[in-house]
Each structure stands twice: as C-alpha cells, then as structure tokens.
Amino acid sequence: MMPNPLDDYPIHQSSESMSHVTTSDRNFYDRYYFNGFTKDGSVMFVVGVGTYINLGVMDAFVLVSYKGQHRVVRASREVEGANRLRPSVGPISIDVEIPLERLRVTCEPNEWGIELDAVWNGAMPASMEPSHYIREHGRIIFDSSRLAQTGGWTGTLTVDGTKMSLTDDNCWGTRDRSWGIRPVGESEPAGIRASDPFSWFWIYTPIRFDDHSLLIIMQERQDGSRVLEQATRVWADGRHELLGRPEHKLTFQTGTRLATGGTITVQPHGQAPLTITAEPMLPVHIGIGTGYGYDADWRHGMYQGPLKVEGVHIDLTTPEGAARMFGICDASAKFTYTDKHGTHVGYGLFETMVIGPHNQYGFTDMLDGFAG
Image (cartoon, rainbow, N blue to C red; front, side, top):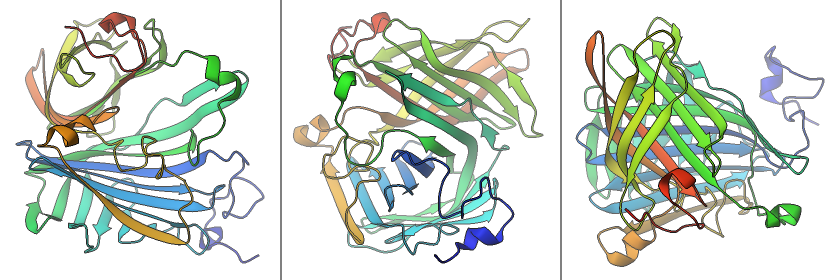
C-alpha cells in the first residue's frame, strides 16, 4: 500500500495510515459546509464537500438561490487517488489557506451556469460545538463533532451569466466542519427502528455581529425534551460566554412547516433575559438536489461511479417548483437583540427543520402543516 500524503504530518491518532479512520462504521463522514448571502436578501449560496472514507466516495455541491431560481451543480468521485489535503470533486474544490481562518472555495465554469471563486475570511474564532450523540436500540446513529465560524466572502459568484462581486461589506456567511458518524450513503434497512415514531425538531443559528457572534442550537424530541443544545456568545478575542438554556417561539407559514421568523430567548447566569428576533430574508431548501437525503438517486456518500457531474434547476416562481421545497431550510436572516450595551443587529443562518410530531406547535403527523 502506498502512503498517504497526510502520513508525512505528525497528526496520527492511531497506528493506521491516514488513509483509514479508526472505525469501520460505513457511516463515517468528514464534511465542509459554507454559506454566503447578501445583506439585502437577493442571493444566497451554499457549498458542501464531503468525504465518506469507508464508502470510498467524495462528493460536493454548490447551490445558489437567485431571482426565484434554485440551481445546483453537484459532483461525485471515488476517494481513491483523491488529494484530501485539497478536496476536489469535478469543478468544485477547497483550498485551506490558513487553517481556521481563511479558505478558498472554487467552482469552475460548467454547463449548469454556476461559477464561484471566493475566499472565506473568518470574522470570529472558530468554535467547537457540543458533541452530537444519538444511540437507538443499541446502535450509534450520530456521534459527530463540529466546529462553527461566522465570517465574510471576497471574490466573485456567477449565476446564469450574471457576475456578482463579493466583499465583506455585502456578503457575510457562516461555515462549519463536521466529522464522525451520521446516516450517509445508500439507505439501510430500518430494522427495529421502523416501528419507532420519528420526530426531529431543529433550530441552528450561527449569527455574526460587528464585534461578536452568537452560536445557538436546539434539537428536540416531540415532547420538547432536548437531544442537543447550545447558546454561546463568542468575542473577537476568543472569549466564550455561556448564555444559558435557549428557548424558542417560532412562526410558520400556515399550512406548511416553513418557519417565517420568531424569537429565541436566553438568560445568562445572573443577568436579564436576552430576546433575539429572527427575520428570514431568503429561504433556501438545502435538502433539494444537494444530497441531504431527499433525492433517492443522489445522497451524500452514495456511489455514482468513478466521476459524475450533473445539475439541478427548479423554477420556484411556478407552483410546481415551489411545491418541491420542503424539509430542512437554510435561510439568510437578520437578527436583533438588546442588552445593557444597546441594540445589536447581525446577520447569519436561520436553519430550521421540523419533521414528525411536535407538541409545542401542534404538529401531529409526519409533515402536516401549521394550523395557525
């Protein structure tokens, strides 16, 4: 066996070559996620690049929502022969220029009309989130770690012939790096889990303000009990301030599960409560066309052959196109809150997913809409 280029760095965590991970679980993954959006809500893009070493697959996507059009270019390749120091799949690649600070994301010209050449600059230090761990019927379903960061973009984005200049003044965003175990690849038989009622309530809001960021996560079961939670304020100098247990009060579009805004309230120890208002600007359904599990023919880690590149285009201005949007939604959003220092205005990600029953909002079935 040939050594891996990573083997030349003193970063080993086991006696194995860096070509391998320490678990044989098929669901091991290692992924980049980025988003970028203009503060006027006119455009949003999302980029993902993932490696699924035990499935032998690396894949990537770039999604752009602009002028009512949902466009995706996606690519999949075999891991063998891939340079994991510079992940590249078809036209999409990532260069880590300064770890945890600056990365370059590229999508070369392609027939689906999406081009991107942009540098991510972290505005605040990258932060580790709480571990995500779920065990069901004795089997580990989730066991992952993730770092998160807010920042901005410099470069260019081209969509269907329209070239846009990205600067830190007009294009902010968030990113994360996650790795570990979660369901990926071809669907497995559910087995005993088929009899379990499924409920997944999720709010994820990394937010950038001028001199700090807020990182808030909530995952709940049907009864509101928590699987995962975090509420942290991160300052530019690296200080982390715990903000207590976050609580939510969302609004939904009647007849759907599309969150139209709401508030998140936290109460730091010994301080007055803080209420953060979320105002979504541009909702982007990242599960459609990108591999997050809603498309039977394209899931993250699914084997597509030595190399495959293709695109998806959905016109959201038509009833048929709009009806295809469901599930997890990544919305660019404006956030405001007031404390003893005044009113703070920031921009970030308002990611929500509500599948299955949830008592607080009156959902009783898998995908029934909000009754109002």
